[in-house]
Image (cartoon, rainbow over all chains, first blue to last red; front, top):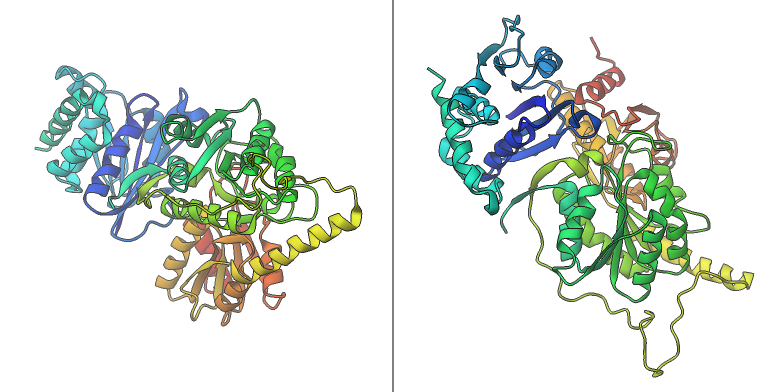
Length: 178
Length: 353
C-alpha cells in the first residue's frame, strides 16, 4: 500500500521541511519513499507544495495527484488541492489562516488554529509541525520515537537547538486529538 | 551500507566524486543547480577541482582540457546550457576523449520552462554536435539508479574513449529518495598510453586533437571510431522489462515518464489488461534486442514521453515497423499522470468504458 501526501502553503511556512520530516520517518522505518518539491517561481513568494509517497513497494510516479492526506496552510493551497483528496481521505488545515470550510462529506476534514497554537506556546513559525503532529495522531503513520529520530537526522548539527522546539510543536499537535 | 535521503542532483554529484571524478566545471541553471552547489561544497575537500566557469561553453572546454590529461572530468547543465556545450562535446568526440555530461532536462525550445521535460532526446542520441559521432547516453529513472549510472558512465567513457551523457530531468534531479552509495573508487583505468600530461622528454608526444586537414586520414579515424560504436551497439544496450512476458500492449518510456508509465501498467494489470513496460536504460545505444524481446507477444506499442515524441522513431526502427506504435506525451514541463497513461492503454485494449 502506498500513502500519498500533499503538503501545501506559502513559501516560508516550512512546507518542504514538514514533508522532509515525513520522508525521513519513512527512511528510518525502512519504507520506500519519495519527496518531490514544487520549484521555480511559485515558491518564490507564491505557494509552495511537496508530494510525499510512503510505501512498502517501490514508488512509481512521485507526483501526487490524488492525495490520501492533505495538509493545507493557506487558502490558495486549500482551494487548489481539496477536490483532489481521495474519498475517505484526510485534510488538515490551519483555520488561523484558511477561511474556507470543507464542504466535502466523503473525507475527514480537521481544522485547527495551528498558527495560534504554536504562537501561544512561544513556538513562532512552528504551525507546520502542529499540523504534522495532528496528522500523525490521526493516521498512526509513524510513532513519536520515529519522528524524534527523523528530526535528528533532518536537522543539521549546527541547528540542533531547533530539534526540541519542533518536537514540542509536534507533541502539541498530537495532543489536539481529543 | 546505510540508506541516506538525498535529492537526485546532490546524489549525482556525490556519486561522481566517489567514482573518482577530479574536475567539475559548470555554470548554474535550474533545475540542475544543486548538483554544482554540492560540488562547490565537496569537490575541493575530496582533493578535486570545482570551478564555476564564465559560461557553459567555457565549462565544456575545460572538461576537454582536463580529460586530455587523463583525469575523470565532468560538467552538468540543463537543456539550454547543454545546447551551448554541443560544440565542445563534438570536439571531445573528435579527440577521442572520455568525460561525463549530465543534462537535467527542462522544457524547451529556447529558454523554455524550468519544469521537467524530455525534449532533448533527439539532441542527445542523434545530433549532440556536428560531425560523424556518437556519445553514450544513459537514462536512469530513480535516485539510486542515477548514482549507479554515474560510475557506469565514467567507466564506459574511459573504456571506449568517448563522452558519456546522463539524460536526467527536473523531476529526477529535484526529488529525494533513499539511496546507498558505493565505496569510493581507489583504482582508475590507466590512460598513460594516450594522456597528454608531461613526460620529461622520455617518450613521443601524445597529441590530443580533432583537426585533420588530410581528408583520407580523417576518414580512417572516423571509420575506426565507428568500429568501436558497432561493438558498443552489440554489447552495451540495457533495458528494464516489466510485465512483458505475456504483454499484448507494451509501453516504451524512459526516465521520469517510465516511472509514471510503470504505475499505469501496474494499474492496467489489476484491470486484467495484459500490459507491459520496456524502459530503455541506454538511449544510445538503443536497446533494440531488448525491445524486440519485450514485444514478442505484443500487438501494439504505446510510446510515452515528456516531449512531442522523439524516441518514437527509434522504437519503430528497433521493431522494424512490425507493430503499430501509438504515442502519448505531455511537453513543455508538464508531467503526464498515471491515470492519463492508463486511459491510453485502455483505449488500445479496446475495453475503455
